[in-house]
Image 1 (spheres, one colour):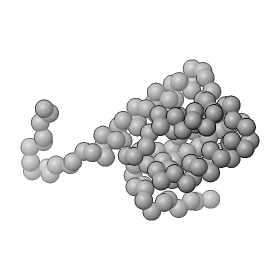
Image 2 (tube, one colour; image 1 turned 180 degrees about the horizontal axis):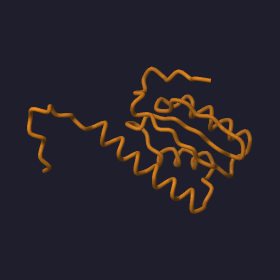
Image 3 (cartoon, rainbow, N blue to C red; image 1 turned 120 degrees about the vertical axis):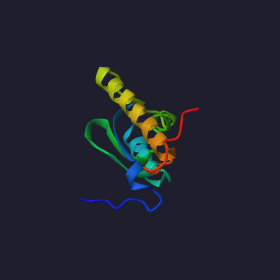
Image 4 (cartoon, rainbow, N blue to C red; image 1 turned 90 degrees about the horizontal axis):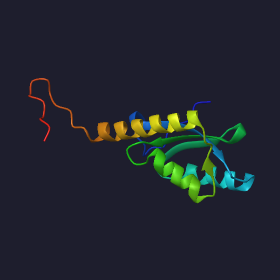
Length: 117
């Protein structure tokens, strides 16, 4: 099934995050999914089996750290482990990279590139 993106989101800056969430009851889980789907920066959120959360959001306005804070505010926490911490580090790196690319002003090939300050 192909889902249409929200009109406010820029497709080139959409980030997809897969996280394993623990500590949420079934009702809390449904509330988190519903609130995420109504969040202006979130394009799409869904819950999978075994506590898997899949969220696609606009990386220029929201980050993985804010998503983790949102989950913690609703009483959940991320599953621990080496793989999860490695994945989180990669997600945070790409969040920073997307945000930097969104702010970047391209230059023409006939100009000198801007110098670092």
